[in-house]
Every structure is written in structure tokens, then in C-alpha cells.
Image (tube, rainbow, N blue to C red; front, side):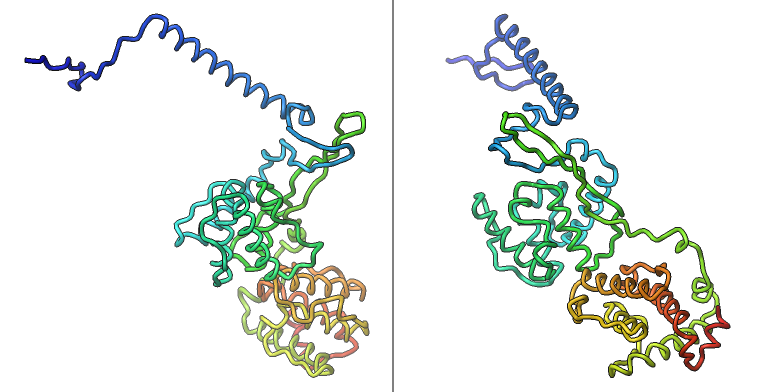
Length: 373
């Protein structure tokens, strides 16, 4: 009769487990010490890379003579504004894709292969892209990414020099290329989020010299410009008071400004019936300034039929330039606010124009506007 195998202290059968020898114990200790040394060496290399970003140990760059490469400055990753922008964009993507059960944790690691970008664009544009759902190889990933980016470019209708992303940048996990792309999508689809202002990334332009050394040049890549209102625009003015407490005056002012505008636009067989929306693309503002200031405005200077956020902002910014050329002060309103149908911002601009030209052409009700202000 065979005896049962010995049991281990916890009640389970021991399957031939032999006792650890003295040499094996010594070996385990040596391995742990070796791993500890590797960790310390790795941390030391990391500190050296940050302190000496151009050292040969920092970047494994295979550059030919006079060839240059642009990389992210290691210190840029700790920029609070850059970190905030990434957090805002990640939260936005996750909100858009919540039904897809997609969770993005890193813009660089999760967007480079085109999968998340495909789902994001399909959700935003409400259309299906003709691409493979699953891609494993690098070639198929790049093909898919190219298709997605082609769709983006067709929607945004950017000029070639305005496009600051491409397959190489996105697939190589280039942070500034990914950020440029996402900020453009946020603006085009008028996403209900507030991007941090005045965000840029520090880049290093590395170039190999004939002597085999490496030179560097720092540059700043602007991701989100500074569109913060001026200090004066943050002060409450008469429009704030009228909007909050005197709606009857608001109706008078709005109607008078609309009559003033239509006195001019009727010359082009145009008419404004809704101040709230008809100035949002900037076309009527440009035409109005052309008529009042006797400016000849070539059509190639603005977008007659704008179909994206950037083109509308361009039109309104151009109208602001015409106002400045006519001797008016720079409006307190931001072009972006007018595009986003901010009634108060639109009326402020129209009032500025009205005050500059109403002396020579007083429309009916002008005294009502003057009394309100």
C-alpha cells in the first residue's frame, strides 16, 4: 500500500518542492542587489538626461551631417498649463466616447494608432469612416491613421500651411502634433469645453555638425493662443446693467442697431432680421465696414461662405482690423465670443460702429440708444 504524499502546512499536497539551498539563497540576494543597482542607475540616467538634454546618452539620434531633428524639451512635460490642456482634452474625449466604452488615459499612447481618433471623429461628425476596425501591424495602423487625418483635413478645410499634424507626427506619438489636431477639432465642432489660454510647448531643434557634435536651438510652439479679454473688458458696463435689469431698454437698443445696420446693407440687397445669429460668421460685419468706411474689400481677404470655426473667427478678426483702420478703438469683444453667439459681445461691436458713424447718418431711434447709455 503506497503512502500518501506529505502535506504542506497549509493543507495542500507538496509536489516535489525541494528545500532552497544555501547557494540559491545567496544567489537570490545577489539578484536583488543587482536589480536595485539597475534601478539606481536608471534613475541617475534620467537625472542626467534632464540636466544635460543634448548629451549623447540622452537621445539615441542617428543624424546625418547637417540633418536636424525636433524633439520635445524634457522640461516641457512639467509645464502646468500643458498638463492642464492635456487633462481637459482627455476628459473631453472620454465624455464624447463614453458610449463606446473607450477610456483614454494618455494622448500619446492612446491616439497614435488612429483607433481612438477614428471613433472620436465618427462621433463628432456623425458619420462612419471606411476603415478597418482592428489594425495590428505598423503599416495598417499608418494606413488607417492616414484615412482618418484625410477626413479631418476635408472637414476643417485648412490651407496646407495651416495643418500642423501628419501621420508621421501622430504615429510617432509627437505630443505637439496631437495637441494641434485635438485643439482644431475642439474649435471646429465648437466643443462645450474651456481650453486653457496661452499654452505652448518648448521644443529643441537638434542639428549634427560636420565635426560630429550636436547643436541645439530652443523654440516655442504655440498650441493655444492668448485670447483672454483685456482688463477693461472684465469691468461691468452699461450692457451688463441693461441685460440684467433693464430688458425694455435692451429691446430698444437692439432694434435701433439693427435699423442702423440695415440702412447700409440694403445697398447690397441684404437684411438683418436676427442680430443674435447673423453676425456670427463675420460676413455682415466685413460688408458693413466696407460700406461705412468706403473700403474696397477683395473677396480673397475673407471667407464669403465660412464653414468652420476658424474661418468665422478670421472674418470677425478681419472686420476688427477694418474698424481699427477706420480710427475706432479695438473692440472689447473677442471674435470667438461672437462666433459662439454671445449676444452681448455682438451688440458691443455694433454699438462701437454705431457711435463712430451715427453722427453723419442718424437713424430713427438713435436718441433712444444715446438715452440708454
